[in-house]
Structures are given as structure tokens and as C-alpha cells.
Amino acid sequence: MADVDITAWRGASELFVPLADGVCATTAVGEALRRLVRERVSQPFRAEVDLALELPPVVPASVATTSGYVASFPHLLGAVRSFSGTRRDHLPLLEAVERGDDWGASLAATDVVLVPAACHGLYAVHAGATVSSMTAEVSARCFRHEPAVDPTRLQSFHMLEFVALGTAAHAQGFADVGVDRAAGALRALGLRPEPEVAHDPFFGVGAAMLVAEQEAKNVKTELVVGGPNGPYAVASVNRHGAHFGESFAIGAGDGVAHSACVAFGIERVMLAIAVAASADDASASLIDEARRFARSAS
Amino acid sequence: MKEEARQQIRRVLVESALLEDAATVGDDENLFHAGLSSLTMVRLLLELEATYGVEFPDETMTRERLHSIDAIAEIVASLVALEP
Image (cartoon, rainbow over all chains, first blue to last red; front, side, top):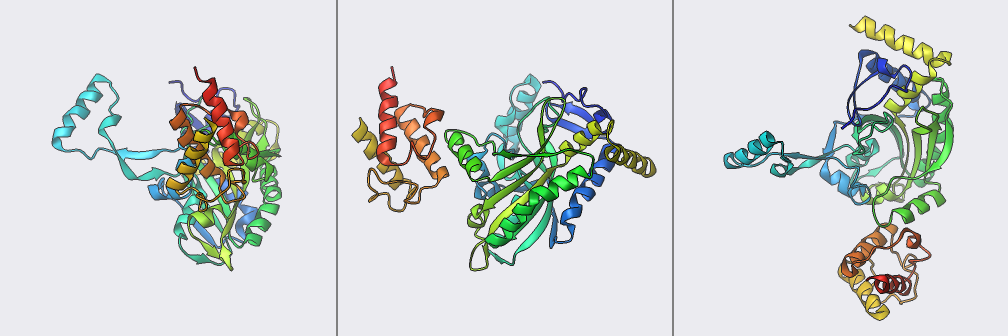
């Protein structure tokens, strides 16, 4: 297993320390920058946020089945397993570990999974309820099982989402201005995002059909920036329609709740800032601010 | 073969409760118009792949190609015919 390779990402070594495929620790400067990024990209949305949620790293497994994540993205899901055997079962576990064998067979599924997407927590909180149209800020450390040496594909990363939940008009209106607002927030950090029609990475036999449908319906728009390994998305705007409202039995107005979200991949934004800092004053001053904050906090 | 595939598709639709009108929907009727979602179609295709030991190629994965029981049975029959 090779570690994440950040050598081509100028300035990234000040922010991240590779641990394994798709896994990085964050330095003090990186942590300070993460907070700054969160604060800055929130600005265009802050005035309308009715509810702010910080999710723990896990959610009930039922959230992942209800949302459809298990059905559509089983290859990305991380389910938490633990040892729940007896004293008699302990020995086979120890022996497997000592032999260097697969010891996962000694573990059993728990009732929690690692958070796959921040906004799912919002729907779980309102499951079965009727809501007034709202905008929520939801932050989570998410997990996606896609180990890679490319630092834009971390397995564990921070996702910050602004989510409109309510009537169809509310969700639609939010998504319609979402691309411009998110792009504006990213430009203020010194980045040059370009919108692109995109799709989710569905698994299995129907993937091609689901991808074509998403693209035809303009469900997902990504904001893409250039990087040493090619273009990559730092944010996305997603129109869910009534999918989550139906799945979680959330009502709004006279019918089922609709939703839409603007999602930022915080570590990806940080990588982009690190690269841009050599040529852009806004990015460079953000890194400087993060350095000052890290020094004053130590 | 095609007739057997038709019956199997309808059996899966009914027994797995994938479509409310599964027992009465016409062989040439559009399943998506009848209320079948894309994800439910995926469920049906997985059942058929397991039953017949075939894999639906990506180029068949469109709502147009998979629109009816007839259309799906046609694909299944052609895939089974290709099996060694």
C-alpha cells in the first residue's frame, strides 16, 4: 500500500501528512486553513442558515439504507464492525492477528456506518416530520472507500454542505443560484472554478442508466479546478428533487419535501489554495493567515 | 426462450413487489410510465442476471432499451443465446 502522494502539490506538505492510501493527517497550519476555508465559503449562505449541524463521524446504519446509499454506492460505504464474540471467540481473533491473517471475520456489523454524505444527517433529523422550508449548514467528516495516492481522493475528508429542504420551489430556487454563489466563494479564495455537468459514481448493473439520467436532468453540477493530476471538483450543486423527502418521509407545504445542496470538499479546496498560493494573492494571504493562527495557538 | 423470460420478468416484478400493477401491466407497456423507477429496474436486472447467468452489457442500460417486459425479454433471450 502506497501513501498519498502530495509531492506534485506545491505547498500541500505544509498542510497534510500522508498516512496511507487516501488517508492524511492535518498539520496545525492545515487545521487553521480548514477553519478559514469553512468560514469563507460559508459567507454567501450564512444569512439564510436556519439550522447548523455538526455530525459525528458515524450515523445509524438505517440512514444509509433509507437514503439509498447502500443500494447505489455499496463500493464507497464504510460500515463499522466490532468484536462482539465471547471469551471463547477471542482466541481465533488473536491467532488471526498473530498470523497476519484476515481477522475481519471475527468482527460483526454494528448499527452504525461512517457518514457517507453530510446532508443525509439533516434528513434523518427530520424523518417523518413536516418542515417549513429551511436552509441548513451541515458539516461532517465523511468516508468514501476509494483508496488512492491522489490526494483529491481521500477516504476520510470534511464535507461542508448548505442544504435547502422544503417546498419544490425553495429547493429549486436554492439550486438555481447555488452554482454562482459557490463559484463566487471559491473565486474569493483565489481559485478559478469552472462549472461542469457531472454525475454520481453509481455501482453495478444500472450505473450507465442512472448516470445518463442524472446528466440529462442536470441533477449535478461540479465546480472544477485544475490540479497537478488533472481537473478535479472542489464543490458540487445537487438537485435531489423529492428523493430524500420520499425516502425519509419528510413533508413540506402540501406535499413531499424537496431538497438541494451545495457541497464543498474542504480538503480539496485546501489543496487548490496551496497550489494557487504561488501565483494568487488571495490564496497566499489565506495561507499566511493560517500560519499566523497556528503559531498563536501553539 | 423469450416467452420464458417474459414470464420470469413478470414473476420477479410480482413476487418482489417491484411494481404495483405488475400482474396486469402489458408485455409491451412502458414499465417506467407504469411507475417503475430506475433503481427498481436495477433490482429486476440483478434478479435476471442471477437467474440466467448473464450480464446486461452497458449499451443496453437505457430506458429506451429496457422500456417493457417484451424489450427486456428480447435482450435476455439474445444474451442466453450467446452463452456457450
